[in-house]
Length: 386
Ligand code: TTP
Ligand code: MG
Image (tube, rainbow, N blue to C red; front, side, top):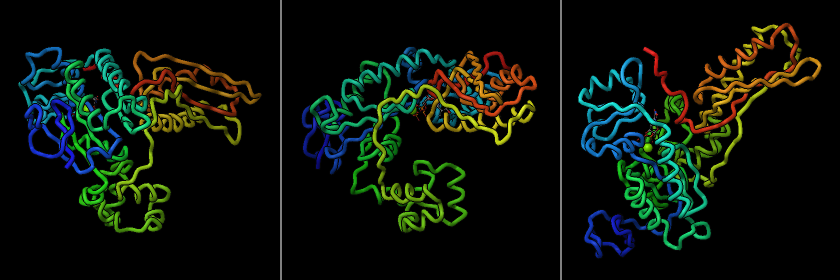
């Protein structure tokens, strides 16, 4: 069977140890050299960066987050996770579970720099890199795309090693034949994992999984499915495409394909959307500030939803108005920190609206967010809140 040493990154034909360096960190997989879509995700990203910079903390439980008050955990390192702390857990609770943890406030500028260093290494191997956030990306390592004439598995192992040596943190990698399964693979052996999902095993591997494991199936959809008696991906595999479409609409087709391990999405390099906005034209012109605010509120929800789907946040909030006589007004406000939250968007745009809604009638209202950045940078907890 095809095998690869993760330490010296050479391919060879099966065997439990590396014939060259004797390492036991060997991957064996029948399709190892036939798969070319990769997903890389940093292990306990913020915490790993902090540990890199303070090696004396290597074996200590480290939590990144604002200490005290109503702060939450942004990252718990793998040592801390053994005691229970997790991302998004209230800090007081995390410290109840792991009182010996070292708490470090986040340093987003530093994590952005590290992220850029990692992306620079990716760029040496392929131009088709699609970052999903600061700490994860898809890579297309197909022949004809990749910049180095080595098999994708070898390139991925080398990248993993290069990130460890040059950047100083560990990442987990997934290798498969599409994005959905590559991402699933990278999550299977964290931390410092290298996991492969081939065509031969995909259907069987997916079958026992809960429906929530499928891309795009959130808590609400999963509940709807369970209510309909569908708990596992295996059950979806037995259903006809027409039946899934009848039950779940357009998404039914995606479900049908994904349950079989199929995903046609391409790896699309960094698309820098410039702004995200939504607007609405009224059936009749509106001058009532309360009704304008209500319209704005619905639009803010939509914009926040789109930001969330794109894992984006933005720093500049834009209010757009069109008067009854077709004059377009735009008003901007730049925030101290990016946001992805509907309430925050509405609060800022609402304040801009207050100045304009002076009795004039408007035929259109819109809200937008510019200066887009990564969702991970959004809405840092207020340093001064108690
Ligand atoms: P993740 O990749 O979800 O988590 P992780 O890298 O900390 O851990 P692992 O991948 O090994 O499971 O998120 C990447 C970073 O994004 C994380 O280090 C901190 C930030 N983040 C938050 O700020 N809040 C959150 O709720 C989550 C999940 C992540
Ligand atoms: Mg991660």
